[in-house]
Length: 373
Image 1 (cartoon, rainbow, N blue to C red):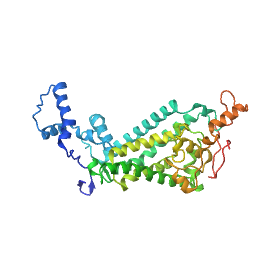
Image 2: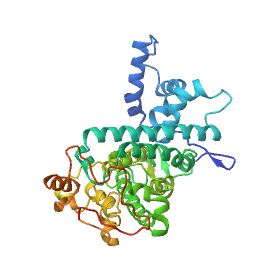
Image 3: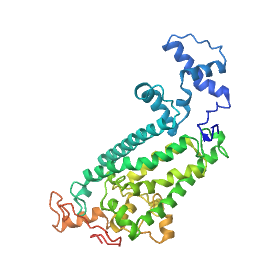
């Protein structure tokens, strides 16, 4: 790590150890592009170091190789922030500028991921028949989106503090596979350990948020959505949302993690969070006992004190909070709708007992049972 005074700064990117591979995959196409598109005569007899100097002169090395929050920040700086936003007197590695940039990038990224993934899931995966359920609220989708879009900017403030520490080099994130303790096998192991670590941490944080002295203040807003849509995925109280996301940010400060993998896992986490609220209850039979999918998580919304896990059912089994999904027993939300329709208790337009937007809350933090059971 390179230091400036007492403050670590970003490490310089090390060139690939195999220069011939680097030359073949990056320098040769670059030379062809310069000759063909820009009419710049760059002879093939030039050395690797000559071409590497040209690449650095073009300012594309960092943008080609960095793939974590550094990449996002560098791309934003290179194409938008430096030429159009910040005054030239503000250096790109200045702390204040990085914090402001991270706030902007984090909020835009969160909004794009939430609205983009939510929209795709809502239109192509979510079963809209679920909106006929007695516990589906009036204007629920609009309310979910409004709550999430109000909370995300607040959640971003402490999140950016952690991103800033990562960008400044305080974490154990690394750029190249060669820097990992065991090469590629360690990269694979770190992916598995990340999922297991965060799953365990989130389970206990989630259970803590259900404590009767905590629940009504912070976690109850998320349980308003008894029959969630994909847009409920990020509709948390800000403190609730930050605490449940904290393990993802803690991991790279405790364990080495490749930056590309970190970004990929961060995106995966958002996809997964949407998926367990998407109403697609199908789970491959071999995974039904292992994976905590939408069927399991919907029961958590309905029955309150079961299935706290994020990815797996392991900690629910250890903690005694596992419940076999009601969907798999023929007692799920869609089964309820079909039964009520057959009994003539459901109108053709899906009007239900909660048409005025009321819900069965858990203000005292105690467990209640769904009308389905």
